[in-house]
Image 1 (cartoon, one colour):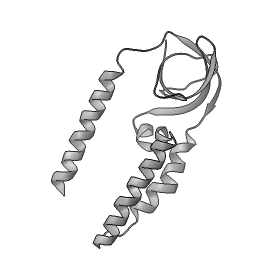
Image 2 (cartoon, helix red, strand yellow):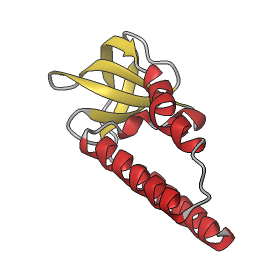
Image 3 (cartoon, one colour):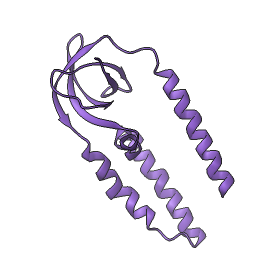
Length: 141
């Protein structure tokens, strides 16, 4: 079990490194944001709804382990399918916050914005779109 856990940690570290390197370029021009609302409560909803019941599951039998694995895969599929991947509490641990905001860049569009730091009305950011409704942003100073 230790070898499998170590393997998963290494794979996760590799994916994080690849993701960080893929986002080094490609940032937008500086843009202004407005209508900012805090969406950080999504982390707590994720924990309370999905993680806490799974943590307290007894894994003594093979059937329970199989049930736990199926539930984790199903929860992951639901979050990816509904584009709620940004509500993962790991992002909060890494210092990211979630906001809904209107970005003024060649027009106006409302996005779920993931960024480090506090986003306020009139903040100036650079962003990279993750999908049609979600973007990763950094505050421009």
